[in-house]
Image 1: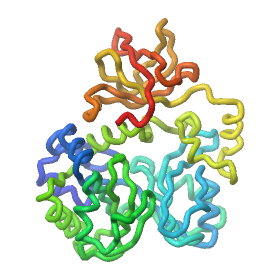
Image 2: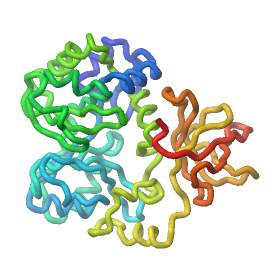
Image 3: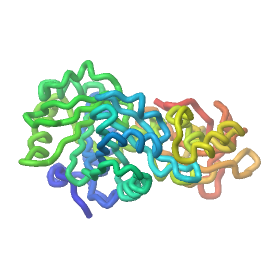
Image 4: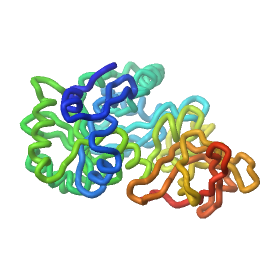
Length: 361
């Protein structure tokens, strides 16, 4: 298993570790509910250095990004980021990703899911017909997500970047904890506010930054957070997880990602997805909360009152914030309206649930 530059820190803190995307990653430290509440109410630090980062450079870099992603990256100016996806030839999703504009029309950074680094690299390289300069910097890039309503106030003394005025989905490069060339980005996967910071681990910068963050934040209740709480936090927001809620077989429209699918430009499988928009989708990803007691799990069947199969659960958990079980799942379109009554097949029982508006909390 691979390790991040922070693995020893996690072990020293007594983290429960487990394999994830080929890395030895922290799942929890003090418990998922406790860590979840820390991020919702105060601030927490996630080591997400397993994520992938690609640099695309050159006069044709934007053209390549436009052809392989669904969103319109021509709208990006330097210092702005964008959520997007890589459609495949059948109109499914190779991966979802972030596109960062480092230098307009010239230099971009793509941030991809850890489990898809090789797959995404090969997909983009296959479409790189104009010899755009590509660099896979995943192995040398550290990524920490400091999330929560108090995150920016805790971090401000450590950086020359004006965190309070860093708008959502913008970023700046600056000094952080005495380390130069750190990208500070107003993004995250929790819906709780905060930033993500990207930097290269050289000359002990990873240890330096980690130590500085906890020296500044420890007295203010800042906690290390594992991937377990990252999952419950993103699910409460209704954010998709690749491999669960979206994959090579789901279209962006079915997944509720029409807002990142722009038909004002040409991109992979545009004709398929546009035809789907015109003819109408047959299934839709919805949020639901359990009425009957029980936890929905990935791939549980969703049925109607008569027991007919109408879909499947993609993600589910007991929401720490709401104190009730929630989930995401694809259902046939007639059952996707708000307040629709659906049933989750749990072993031999059919447990009642209700379609609700996202986000859950």
